[in-house]
Length: 75
Image (cartoon, rainbow, N blue to C red; front, side, top):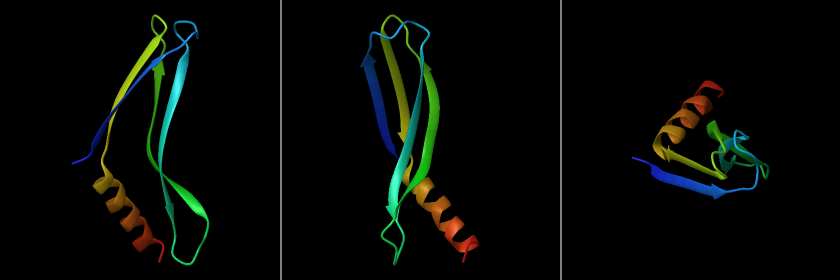
């Protein structure tokens, strides 16, 4: 299960302009005040007729499972 997110935009950038969409999940580690960004998604979209549309699903459980595995491997 995840969160379905849709982004629609209007721009004056010319058709064919490529935007890069990066999605990160901020988190903090125990006993550390630094913030980190857990990678979720990176993709590119093109402007078409002054618009762009992008839809994606954020699967939080998948991210948490991958993060937990990384923590176990690094401990």
